[in-house]
Amino acid sequence: MGTFIKFFFFFIVIFIGLIAFVSISTSFIERRYSNFKIENNTTSIVIGHSHPECAFNDSLIPNLKNLSQSGESYFYNYFKTKRVIMQNASINVVFVEFTNNQIDESMDDWIWGDKFLSNSYPKYSSFMNADDNLVLFQNNPSAFINALSLSLKTKITKIFENKLKRSHISGGYLHLEKKLTDSIIKNTERLKHEAIAAQKDISEANLSYLDALIEFCTANNKRVILIRSPQHEKYPGYENENKYVEILQTRYANIEYMDFSNFPLTNNEYADLDHLNYKGAKVFSEWFADLLSNGLLEKKNKQDYIDERIMTKSLESRI
Image 1 (cartoon, rainbow, N blue to C red):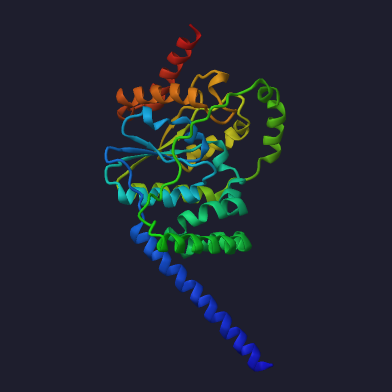
Image 2 (cartoon, rainbow, N blue to C red):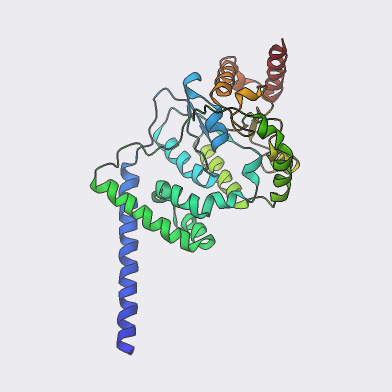
């Protein structure tokens, strides 16, 4: 019986060692041949989740590339941004979405929840270190093991099918056709109560990777500007506005910030209370491009300039 137990544990050690070897080897190969290159004329990128993904139509904004991805937390934004910066020397400005729902504790699920792990981990596992993997394993071991298995399968398939040199970048501008309906507005009170009930503490895990993203960009002489994309005035996420402002004015007091949340749009230019549809994205993106061409980033008081232009736009919309 003792011999069997020894043999069993020996087999387990060998098996784990083999898995570790395959994982490390495939990660090394993927890192070596990874392709995060974008157009040579790109000087700025937008990083974030679905809010900027639907707001910034980069075909209308010269020299800007929208790399936002629905459901992507700062944890995964961080690995994408690092590789993009490393492979694209022309980039000098990184716009990072910083909005109300990104501070909430519910963002933890976007990092290690079953759905998000299985979707995002295989994309970025090769670019994570031991500490990053430990964060995921400690918080959801079973889902992490499943995601690790899926990641290994994905990487091995890429290697054998010679697909490693294809673009690794996921995300980009999302064209939405739908428009905000009266039924959504009517349900605003219900959404508001749900938002209040759902409020918890902040997601320290999510914000720590925003800190790491900012630190990496700064160390590589890239300018980081936090932004808040347009949101409907009845957006339920505004319920944590006080906490949001507090974090902005303390933790990120030394980071540039531009708030576009009050940009004037009609209900027909929203897909829902969180996101712009293609009509709203066109209006906002053309307006944003005009601000950039008029030296927005060189303004001493950028937010004052933005607010002034928003007020002008609002008055024009009423005429």
